[in-house]
Length: 191
Image (cartoon, rainbow, N blue to C red; front, side):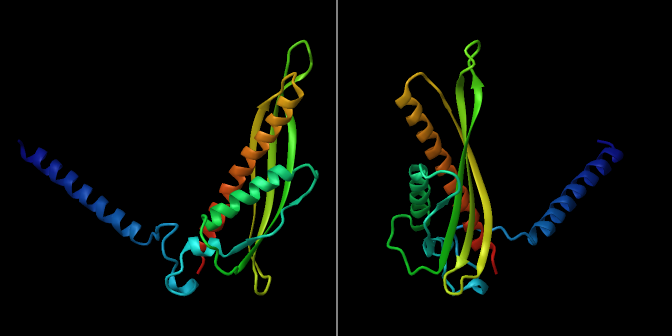
């Protein structure tokens, strides 16, 4: 090994060490912590958890914009959120209130050739939500969530009704997961 090779190898090694140290310094300011761990002590009493805060949310009746027939999708959305927040345990006293407005739209996404009849539909659920403090009705967080689910159209009437209902329920489950994750993120990061 020549002197030039040894010098180049030493320089690469020192550059690698410097890069690792610089990365450590940059990441030292990063505040990554588990979502369902303990909340910072500045946001409330010590020992509170995000799951405890989620369980303290009262879900109000979900309003709909366009149809009264949406009771199945509304029920699925409500039940998914209720289970996601409380996880099947005894709920604590409610400190927060969640209000939601839901809208479902249907669009044709496929047309049979030569028959000019729809062969597939797409159902989109839009939900606007407001998280408020139950004590003073102060708005803590607002947001919007949406999900799309598609289904095939056939010549059987009952199959079409069931397919549309299943698509609405799939969209409601996705929206419920998104709303829960966003509210959990709010509780985990507030100070």
